Image (cartoon, rainbow, N blue to C red):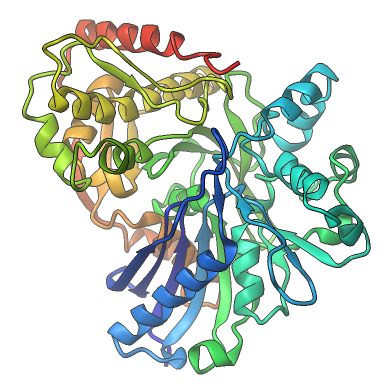
Amino acid sequence: MAKYLLALDQGTTSSRCIIFDCQGNICSKVQREFPQIFPRDGWVEHDATEIWASQMGVAVEAMLAIGASAADIAAIGITNQRETVVVWEKATGKPICNAVVWQCRRTAEDCERLKREGVENEIRTRTGLLLDPYFSATKLKWILDHVEGARERAQRGELLFGTIDTWLIYQLTGGKIHATDPSNAARTMLFNIHTLEWDAELLRLFDIPACMMPKVLPSSGVFGYTDARLFGGEIPIAGVAGDQQAALFGQCCFDAGDAKNTYGTGGFLLMNTGKAPILPKQGLLSTVGWQIGNKVSYVLEGSVFVCGAVIQWLRDGLGLVKNAADTEHMANKVPDSAGVYLVPAFVGLGAPYWDAYARGGIQGLTRATNKYHIVRAALESMAYQTADVLAAMQTETGTPLSALRVDGGASANNFLLQFQADILGTKLIRPACVETTAWGAATLAGLGVGVYSDIDELHAARRIDRTFGAQMSAVEREQLLEGWHRAVERTLGWAK
């Protein structure tokens, strides 16, 4: 009898595989980074074949580590970096160019032109999204416009489009299944979140041939089966969700008003809004959380483009730290940031600013500033950006948040979470297993093949590691936030 759930967690900087037992215990975990490609300022690409190779490699390695065969895996769940665009040949399965990553800002001018044409409100009404280079539509149009012969080939039905989940499903099934789920489709700016279909008017607006688009299936349920040659037997692929929706599901945020924040490469605050979408006014997004059967859960989302990636920059770009774990110790070496603010607008600013032309800056430097202040300011920037998003979300819903569930790699940093609780004035709850993104995908897959009869069973597997309560005075909180907002103002429109 199958005893494991296998989660493929394909992220922006690494591919991971985590194998869980049905009680939520991690039995095996393997991670592999892959190269980031920066052709020009503000452009970000990935080699989709490297993504597939790294994801397949960690899956095999994770199974070998515990001696698991295909028969031992009840189902595969896939969770992925969202909005990233892959276009490949239907006949060969080979990409026609590098994947254009969600962080890439190459279509900023295209978005500005569309705004001037007055189509943003219509896009927002249909998709719940802002007109921004972040989303897939303008990226896909760019590929069709700039890769030689691509548009003509797409119109002839020779090319397929997919976000990373679709790309992995296609490869895993040997090209038999070209599909996605609503949580990923809703991030393309081509999907109508009310009708749950590809929107014909938006496909026309962006000049995207409908024959390129994947089939949209519920987030939980059997999408297809892996090619038997990959793992020595067929395994059902039965759960798919974009990484942030998967984390919300993995945190058991099943009820309206439940919220979580993920500290990953980016930072993502999501709140479950129930059975109907809310079209916000505060620079937030309304999107699909997941679909199980005929039931759809919607969410409000605030997206921060650079969160944990600022630590990667401290390590790889400046050489200030050897590994991410060093940052907690270094931040505690100084009592505060000495008035230093680091705004990591490396690829613009997301919610609630949505400024594609913002660029990073460090404010408040003096001769007394040292590397510990810089590292501390980098960690604090994650908390400040989250505070901006939560403030907008609370204004939108009119409901103060009593507690925020947290996860992602940087949530292991106790300094960050205490500062976050202080700057929010809100309790933070960290689960015992911070791999909630992978767990969300795994449990969607488990539901899809009947390992769990309903979502109520998932509450029993959730365990809390630690709760962080606010210790900062309201006066100090307001002073720090005022300084942060002054620093942000100085980065806005910098590259315009």
